Amino acid sequence: MELPVCEFHKVSLLITHYNRSRSLERLLQSFENIQCSFGEIIVSDDGSKPEHLAYIEKLQNQFNFTLVTTPVNKGLGNNINKGQDAVTLPYTLYVQEDFEPSTEFPQCFKNSLDIIQERPDLDIIRFYAYFDYPYARSYRNGFTEMVFHSSPLYFNHLKFYVYSDHPHLRRSNFLQKFGRYPEGVKGDETEYRMAVSFIKKKGRGLLYKDYTQIFYQKNSSAEPSTMNRSEWRSSNNAFILFVRAIYLKFKLLKWTFDLAFMK
Image (cartoon, rainbow, N blue to C red; front, side, top):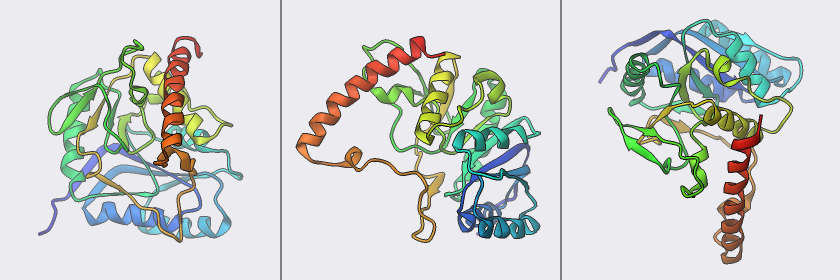
């Protein structure tokens, strides 16, 4: 069954990339396969190796995107900032190069675009996550509205993840409202600081309830993830679980403190 053509003229597709040109190709091709097009495509590269840049330049002829580069690797914050600076349309779909949309994406994205245009109070609509947002209420079209509670009585530390770098739709004035992404720090810290800024400045967002069905994260052996996370986070060792529980309570208090005092 052939999929309907979906053209999103008011949306810029912003893709951040680093040394994974075949993954980038797969992502761009997957949007073509489900017949989704955007008003413009921006690929922001973070100082990839020459062989990857050469391959990306070949892809430009096929997929017609704007390539924004930097001579050296400057980290996630700089990569998103310069990519967003190149956007010219009112809405941005942000996707990292190791994701791929499913056949459910077109209708879900159309619904999200309708919602964000109807609701000027919304800043972000998320399509992917590793976990449920702990404090959310049902909205419509399969979306839930994330509700942040600053009180420590709401003790689930996951409440701070209202914002996420995973695939999402946002208004293209995002940097003007929430500030630029921190540069010169690790990717996790970049994401965390933006999450704090998002909460402090009263950001509001939706999360798709079936958040593993719209985008798939694809990490091949040839182009593995460039983000390394500690193994202890997923360990089932009893002692590690005990230490982790204490650590998460400390993290909740620290993040609550950061929210109150971080500039």
